[in-house]
Length: 74
Ligand SMILES: [Zn+2]
View 1 (cartoon, rainbow, N blue to C red):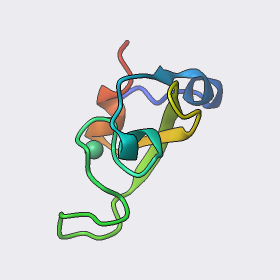
View 2: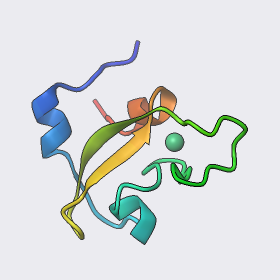
View 3: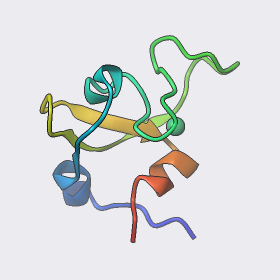
View 4: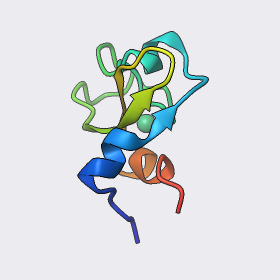
C-alpha cells in the first residue's frame, strides 16, 4: 500500500546529488523523465512535489505513482 506524504513532509524532504534538470524540478528525481520534453507517449506526465533540492533550493518532483512511492522510504 502506497503511503502518501503529508504536506509538511513534502516541503521538508531534502534531495542532494540530483542532476541539473532534476534539481530545477524539470525531471523526475527517480526515473529522470523530463516533464517538459517527455520521451514517453503521454506528454502530460502527472507528477507531484517530493521536496527541495539542497543544491538549488528549488522544489523537485517525481512521477505520480510508483516514482513518488519510491521517493518516500518508510
Ligand atoms: Zn518518474
